[in-house]
Length: 557
Image 1 (cartoon, one colour):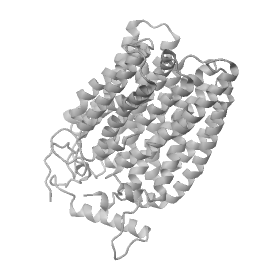
Image 2 (cartoon, rainbow, N blue to C red):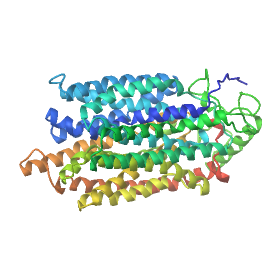
Image 3 (cartoon, one colour):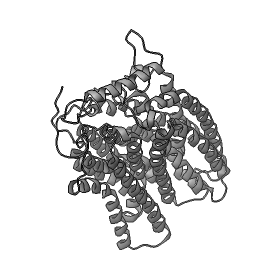
Image 4 (tube, rainbow, N blue to C red):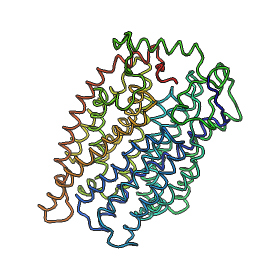
């Protein structure tokens, strides 16, 4: 037995810190807040701007290196890399847009934007992986919440932008350059691995419900105040009050560890989950604590997971006298996962859904202006709000149904891609009043698919190397942006603008063909999602037999 020395800080302090770091990690979603200023200040064409959008997506979703780092280094090291990346990357973009430094080469700006957005990968990977390992029985809820706060980042920064800086793009970039590093440096100490509990805890569900409720109220508050600011002439006092209320909502998860400190619950069986002072970041978080000490799992727990492991083996026809590889639901290495059809089906469905969605996000400002809509900040806040709802709902709804009747989470991916087909057709119609509705639907579907992918990849291929799978899946985002945005949107837009004899394209024709192509893309994604759901249904029936998650033996070290 290996004895582990523990500290006394509960994992909820780290979760509260992760909320703020998660908001900072969503900086890459704010590209529409300064893309128009970047285009006008530096004289870029729409195709050049969309290629910069590809750089933004590439940086955001290139997380293989952060994923590997999470298995070998403590979270604060991973966060520190993100801090450095944000400071230097956004610093260069700020110098260019303010013309402090003249005539920076286009390729240099492209690389700087990759570096800046890559801070999202380092920051987001650190907090998501750490908290998924700290709360292994609530991984769907945790993934939905943290990815939800990352999605709210655009709304938070939009709020700061319009309330404090009157929408100044240069001020926004300065916040990214200096504000993000300050937040992360102040909180990185509290984001740390803990010994997880594999015993169901009713209070944990209550605490997550509280966090979901407060995050929902925050999202509604951000959307409402953004609309008020853009429609009413609010004075500085009201604007500062709105910012103060926003900060209070962001601090609300701290109420959980405060409540646990002053009103500790009486525990049965396992002791409280505690944070580690010196545990290996790769294997430590997957240890199961004993009910009488901080050693490995008790013999009863081993018997339980052995029984589940036997069911998995029988279900795969793998009870043989020879050594076998891992089965779905157990811990895979990347090489073992990469030869599985389910791995590539999951990647393809994510690529088609998210890749098409990010194409619209990157061009949201230009889509709006082409139909005479100038209030980009409200549209951006609406997308952020619905993106948050999708991520929160994707975690909570899929968690409910997977425990109710073992419904595979990818069933909800299929439903959202059907909705996205209709959404792109709504965009293409360019009917009066449909821009808000289409953007809201797209944001919801976009967020839900992200939350579903995180939970599904961890359930099919295990938590041990989950961070590598998660970040590899995310490569579908920049690849989609490259194919659909860089090679499709920019070309069609600039061609139509040339036909109009202007540098700025106006009218529905600027993006109509793009939306029709994206509708076909999501139609294909719907078919692949259905195939994947049918294939993995038996796996979920075994993992969630009896209505609760049973950890396979290979995931307990």
